[in-house]
Image 1 (cartoon, rainbow, N blue to C red):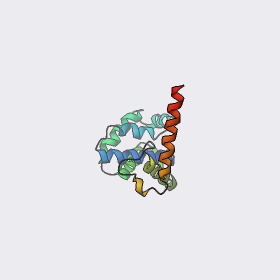
Image 2 (spheres, rainbow, N blue to C red):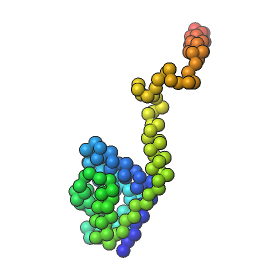
Image 3 (cartoon, helix red, strand yellow):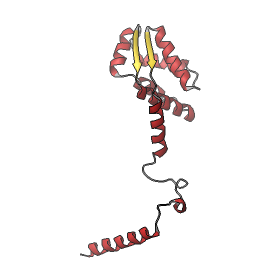
Image 4 (cartoon, rainbow, N blue to C red):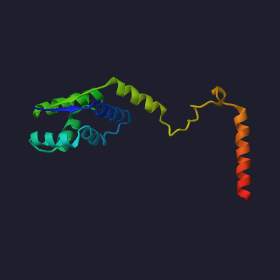
Length: 147
């Protein structure tokens, strides 16, 4: 039996993509997300074992069998489908990756604060003298433009 190990980062990316699909109700991109969990080498090895020789066809069948409600259920469906076709899939997980990704997602905002995320009065580092410094810089910039 062929054994395929999915590294933790790829497992996490797939789980995140599936969770987003469930939340948004848009499952069209799942075919690509499931395929992307495998490396090109893994895909080639799987296709050698599959009767159809086509991972894409297998993924379509897996997603159509899946109930569409649970991330872990999809991973189980992937595992069971491939076991039936002599391929054992192992999704490795690393809690540290999941925690890191969650922290990064919390801080992703293109470096800007949303309207309800930033309150100037609560910012202990805010100093009114900084505003005066900004005005002085603008005056200097204006003088430079006059030359």
